[in-house]
Amino acid sequence: MPKFNKTIDELDSHYDKWLYVLKNLHKLDRLPDKLKEKVFERVFEVAEIAKFSHEEYLSYEDSLKYYRDLKNSLDTAKEEGHEEGWKKGLEKGKEERTSELVKSLLENGVSIEIISKSTGLTVEQIEKMLQGR
Image 1 (cartoon, one colour):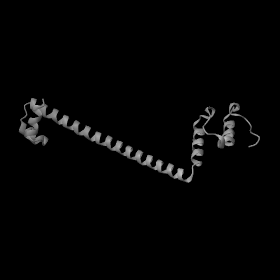
Image 2 (cartoon, rainbow, N blue to C red; image 1 turned 90 degrees about the vertical axis):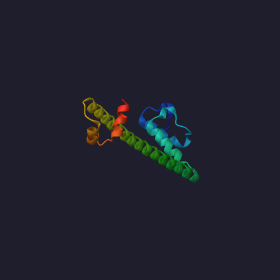
Image 3 (cartoon, one colour; image 1 turned 60 degrees about the vertical axis):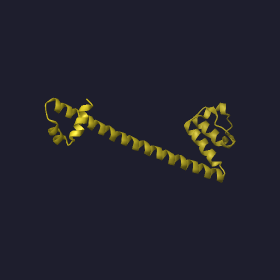
Image 4 (cartoon, rainbow, N blue to C red; image 1 turned 180 degrees about the vertical axis):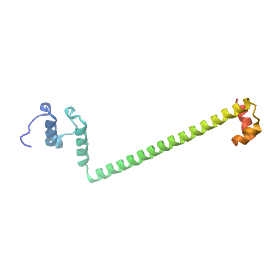
């Protein structure tokens, strides 16, 4: 691109910026502020990786693999935690609903034995609920 001679301060359009990047990328050690756009940041990042030696590239790939494995593990753990939280919440809600039902039945004069047969709870469980009143 011998005919493109604009400096960084003379860049007016996106097209100018692209030409500047293509012509000067090999000279840049950091991305100029005027080129702080997502697309040029990505180009600069890819160019940095392309300059790696074989050993640096292998190390970079290893670090990416480690990062992805760690991220997947965290995402899985988070998902499992949410799932377990939902299960515990549903179970607690079910217990509270059963407890309210038992208390309501007792207040309406239903015997503990009939409540036990109807709910599947033992007499001891029902008595324990009564103590928690």
